[in-house]
Length: 151
Image (cartoon, rainbow, N blue to C red; front, top):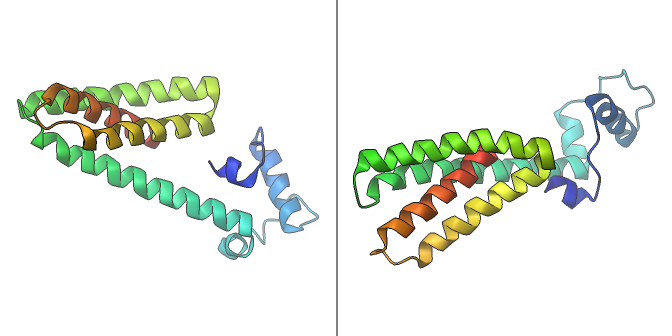
């Protein structure tokens, strides 16, 4: 999402990233680290945009993660069974997100995980309260998306 806002391609390794930061900040030397601090982050508009977007993404993901954890106990049925299924969904998401990220990249993986959590979380609003199995399935897919985005 950040690369999309900046309209830039991601760099391949940390040395290239460091060189890019130094050229953006006007530094001539690659080894000069004296201007790499929080004030540089605030002064550059690109850095500040990235900082704000990442903080909002982090806050939304953690809020959703813990809210889903609290919501599991209100699903009709056995609480222990629901929590067990929820934990299995979270464990699977942690394993699968790493594999997906190695194939398609971390940026696209993060986007897809947030979309999965958002779509199924929004779909929970439209599900009838009498349909317990569908609520559980949507909740687990929401937890899967949010957990994969965090891992």
